Image (cartoon, rainbow, N blue to C red; front, side, top):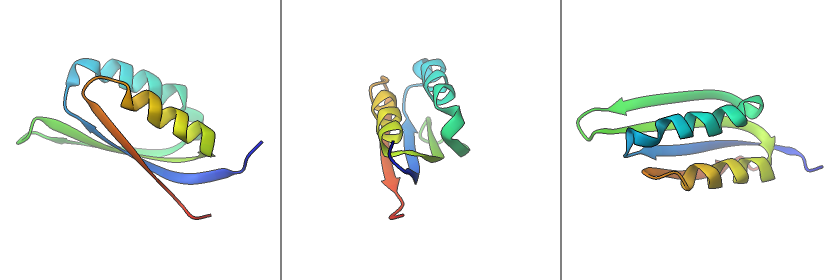
Length: 82
């Protein structure tokens, strides 16, 4: 088993049609999520989310990959060095 890492998964949601799927995936990894912040940006009709996690790198990568496969969602991850 690998050690946990702290990471921030940044998301831009350009299509709200798939928000239910996005929330389902986040719920699936809820045990690893420290906090989540979502900001609707009405002027551009998008939402920006930050999800902070403490999890094995494999779990963080799996979450990011699943989120990135959702239509209208872009996802990138920044890992701590520890």
